Amino acid sequence: MDFINYDNFLETEESPGLTNQIMYHNITHDDMLNGDGLRVVLWVAGCEHHCEGCHNPCTWDPNGGAPFTEWEEAEFWEWLDKPWTQGATFSGGDPLHPTNRDYVGKMMKRIKETRPGKDIWCYTGYELIVDEGEFKLQNAKGETFTYPALKYIDVLVDGRFDIKVRAADIAAKKKVIWRGSSNQRLIDVQTSLKEGKIIVKEEN
Ligand code: SF4
Image 1 (cartoon, rainbow, N blue to C red):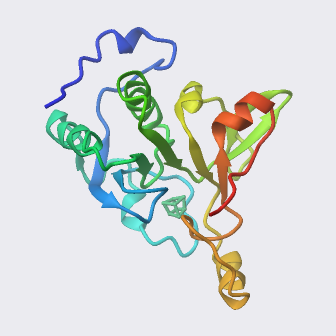
Image 2: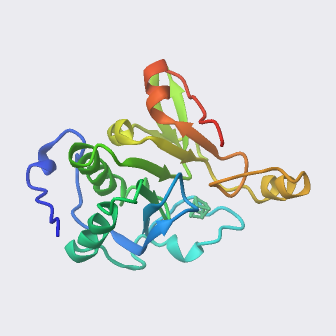
Image 3: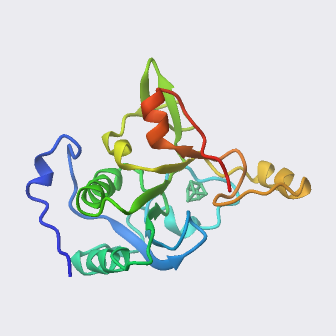
């Protein structure tokens, strides 16, 4: 069991205004559909994007689901630590919803500090942009925020699900892996941060 003491973490720059509790809907493991390899996936509650055709509208309410307590978190770490688990995926809902982003960010920090061999994928309905040299997440209204924990993410699957793009993808028999519609990007975050521009991961 791997329980987390967040006391020190609370004081780090990555977690201003940290709330020490999120709600979640599921933890799946040996998951092959939400990133490379076999993964443990945390499905959090809370999403403000409300995309038409969303498969998980039950996850929109940030107060829905169940509390993600130390017991559920222990389950997450236990599955992440399996030698065959390539990494962790944060999905939902939206892991970067205001109620989730700090808590998820500290989990990402914990992964990179204690389990550097595991990679991190994160799904979000926000779009990653570069604004005057700074990486920001942007919603459909054009509102932006910075996310210090971006530096821990290996692949960010960004943008809202677009049902019309999805229909066109299907009509064109387009291969779209790991996301719902082809407008959503698989962003190689580490290379993007190094190069100062958004680099999309090659699909294989
Ligand atoms: S971002 Fe994802 S969870 Fe949120 S509404 Fe869109 S498809 Fe649904």
